[in-house]
Image (cartoon, rainbow, N blue to C red; front, side):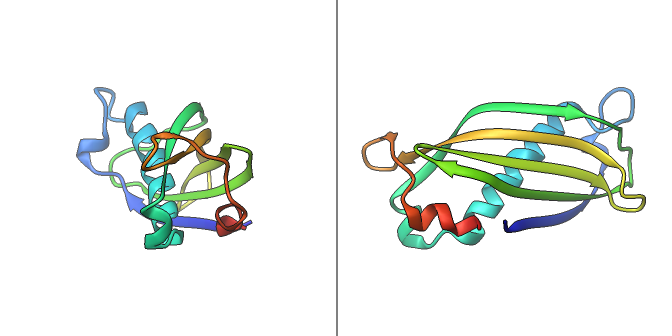
Length: 129
C-alpha cells in the first residue's frame, strides 16, 4: 500500500476560539490530502475521464494541536472495488508522534462526461498499491 505524506505547520487561521486547531480545518486537511494524492498519481488522461465524490466521512479526534505545531499528514487507500474507494488519513504531531486525528472516507468514482458513477478500472485501482 502506497502512502502519501505532507508536513504542515499550524497557523493562526487554523485555530478556533479555544486556540486549538478547529475541527473543520482537520476535515479540510483530509480533503486536501485525498486530492493531492490523487493528483500526484493520476495521469492527464485519467483526470480528463474521471473524478471522485465523497460519499461518507468518519473522523476521530484523538488529541489537539495548537499554534506553531508541526503536523505530519499521512494518507493511503485501504481498498478499491466496484464504484468505491476507502481512504485513510492520519494526522500526527510531528515532534512527539502523537496521533491527533484518524479519518476514513468513502469515495465514489465518477465518469467526468456522463456525471455518473463508474466502476473502478484495474489501472486506477493499482495507482495506489
